[in-house]
View (cartoon, rainbow, N blue to C red):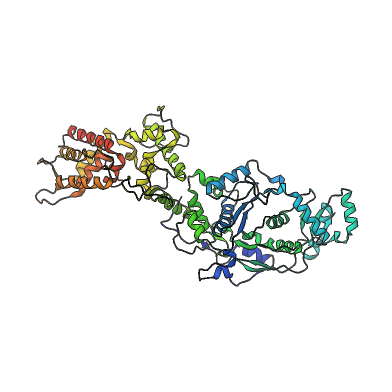
Amino acid sequence: MLFRQGPRRPLFLGRSVWIGHLLASRGYRTSKAASALTSSTNGAKSDDESRPARTRFAPSPTGFLHMGSLRTALFNYLLARSTGGQFLLRLEDTDRTRIVPDAEKRLYEDLRWAGLSWDEGPDIGGPKGPYRQSERLHHYRKYAQELLDKDRAYRCFCTKEELEASQLDSQAESGHTGRYPGTCLAVTADESEERAARGEPHVIRFKSSKKPVLVQDVVYRRFKKRGAEDDFIIMKSDGFPTYHFANVVDDYLMEVTHVVRGAEWLVSTPMHCDLYAALGWKEPVFAHVGLLVNAERQKLSKRNSDIQISSYQEKHILPEALLNFLVTLGWRAPSRKGIMTLQQLVECFNLKFTKGDIVTELEKLEFYQRKHLERLLTEPPADHQPDPRLPDPRLPDPKLLDPRLEPVLRAVADEIRALEASRTGGNSSEFPEPPNSPAPIDTAPLGSLHPAVEDDLEAAGGRQEYVLAALRLLAHKAWPLEGLVAANRYIFWRPSRAHLLETLGQLREALGEVEVVADGSADGVRVALASARRALEPLDHEMSWTADRLGEVIEFVNDSVVCHEPGTGLPIAHATFKLWRWAMAGLDPGPPIHALLELLGREEALARLDQAIELAAEAGWG
């Protein structure tokens, strides 16, 4: 996947391509004036943002959580947390024919993976439960009856065939899709009760207002259709409510104060507001956020596996990277920081949403992933307590693992296992080749696996201290994970003897006419390496084997082993560094030598120097 060096602002279309055309084609009007909330520049929060908000995320268990749904959940979560309110989870499962087995369980797992916790919901209960609509039928029947009693609803006994015929007649006359002709409005209340008591199939229709209903919205401010609503169905013939009716009843009974949802629901909101008014209820604050569209300005398809949250888990995307990416799609952050944790998002969240569809550039997710992974690897957590026993007490204990890094470590360990199985001819019983192994690479240059890596792969509970330390050293380039191990192979494996002999020739060619002088010996590679070993050997304590101390030793060795062009005496320090890198990594590029030595550890570093000294002697160089 391609990615850029930094985040760019999402492409907010000047006109809402999808929702704007839809509204215009259906004769809907929105105010051109900007919302007070979206135009405020003084940084002060409005009343809608400062009072504790009860928000909800109300998905249907008819599929798996996808990117657009997670963004909706995130906005509602942030609003609740930023105002000291509550975030509710409700399942809208009244359409029994579309329910997908296991979808509810997967929904919980995906939301928890993302770090979004809820205060009330189907799995944990709460004072306003139950939180599955299929368990709340008594509420819908009660308020449907109330609307019948108020003459704001009526039973409709029209058959499917009668409705289809009236639709065709209306369409033939006007050229437009027909509305319900009001046939059953003429049925008296007594007749309606009698026919219902006899079990005659029927639905209940809401008697809509005769004039268009005005909607107040945070994003679109004032929204009104040009014509009145049809008399829409609120209770189906099977006794279950329609989405619109259940939505209103549940939001009221659960005391939801703010409804943040996708802009595709804006056209239905007049129906909801009409229901609130008919029942004498105060409507919540509405905020309809822009739809996510692809580069062709088409609404993201739920059938595309790339927008399913589970696909990002499988790719080892960090939850906070995905949330940070999603929150930028339709929301204007008050700061220009860009990279923010979930808690930082809570602290700065407001209702400044943008109008219009948002082109979703998935490539930018790569940027957020890289930055958040680097942050987790290098920065201490918010509750970090400095440990004076550590070499750098400001940094997290290298042996402590943030749980969010566990999938990343598993992926790296899998690549190590695959390469080790390839190196040993696929016959390693200790490290069998895992599924989905990377494409084969040349493992001939690889010597023995670092003992600490062996310990990590065998450790119970998956503790991988060395692999974690290696990732921290490589933090600035730890993403993408694919190929990371192969590109930094000598962090995990000792260079093979054959590879060192091969690269020794390359080293001599690179040095050319440069002489290496050590202990008075010209061309003394072996002597120079032996001098380096003697300088390192006294560092036998954990507190001494640090990058800073090793840097001092390397500088001392470089000063005592002078590389110069014949006849000039001019130091050429990079040649000495080439000797270090040849011994440690067979001339492969990588981290600074002092940092690499610290990671490898004393025993491994000395063992690699011993191997290099021996091979230099065999080659007759010094």
